[in-house]
Length: 382
Image (cartoon, rainbow, N blue to C red; front, side, top):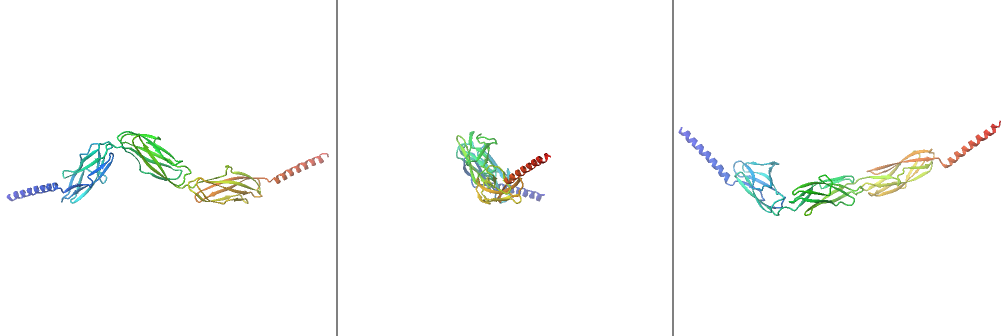
């Protein structure tokens, strides 16, 4: 019985010694909170990001609450790890865990030093100081996640921007754009077309810029500056549009007339106009024709070496009808073609009776009428 009492006494003493030892370890500074930048200077409206290590130099695992204290009420903060908000952290012996601390300084704030603390239960505390260098803010920010777009001259380029009023007062902004000559920019604050907009203090507004290039614009890169201006502040940025080449052409006659008259065996000279309506130079434009049997089609220029955007070329096609062609309508198709695009013209050619044949026909008719009259006169008396 006495030995059992002695054993229990030793066990109790041992447990008390372990608890004392644990408390000694907890109080001996072997748990740390570390971040390299404990004092920073920023302007109102800034966001401060800390990478904060919880270091456990103890020979056992710790599991403690983590918090940020003494931070001003109007300030916002988040403490995260692996994308999750963290309130308590466990750290293995002789290991560390890294947390992300984000502090959002409001726009409406007084100038001065602000001290707050990162705390790990009662085991560790780290003071952090933010120096706000100016009172309030007189800044405006115009931003766009996608400032560069690519397309053809027929594309509409829609940029979605955000205008942020970083001042402590409501602002009325004039919205402007300075596109190259011939370009068109439609500005829509909150998706309604306008040239001005009002934004509350510390507020934001979506601004949509829809940019349209001229139809004959050349391929290349174009800068479009845009700006938002109020009485006390402004912001600007530069949008970029890349126009890729378009291969297009028109093919017709100067008057648009696609019909002609010709006598069998004769020829007709027709003027043709090829225009580069795209944004890229056309090269090696070949001309060809599909014609009725025994007809002939020739060109004064069978190939146009190159044609710049917006430029035209004039050529002549000579169509010769078959000398045995009977009167009527015939179709001849003329084609202008490159490796990228082509255009066709269908000509309606009316074949007329030759003049000599016409007079010969009249003569035959007259002879026939005269013969009939003679016969009637001769045999009518009998």
